[in-house]
Amino acid sequence: MSFWQRTGTYTGLFNIKRLVADEDFHSLLRTQGTRATRLGSDVESRFWISYRPYEARDGSREWFIGPVLTWLYSQNARVSGITQPGSGGNALLAGVTTYVGLRPGMHVWLGVDWDVVHTNGMQFMPVRSHVSFGITQQFRMHL
Image (tube, rainbow, N blue to C red):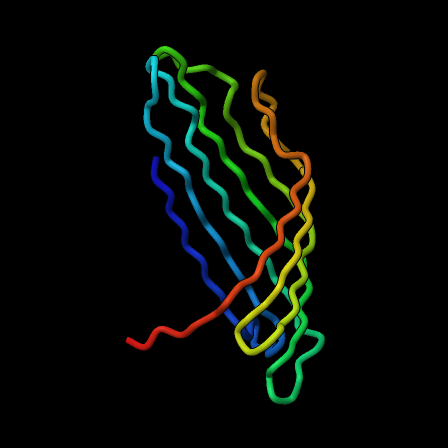
């Protein structure tokens, strides 16, 4: 099993200083387990655009809020070496995310999204709603 993640942020979208675009892409690639069984690999991509209605003059505190789109893909599973059709699929979720700056570069965030459209596979059980939260610390890479 291997995990891969890529995240990016762009501030000043459409030349609007307070508009920020974020993208998070990660995948979980699964390998074969016992009895020639392999659960399908997963891919998730989240894209959100947030507006910053509040920012302290010194940049120490800020608040962002905006819409989010999440695409989830699950590959079909294999049991005893036989692909299980309809066990994988796609789902698109839409919602809202907000985050608050506690200090420069550190944010606490909360996101909620709901299923908009999904694949109708016989065994596919898509995520109907999704709540996420966390703490993020930003840093700069000097190359």
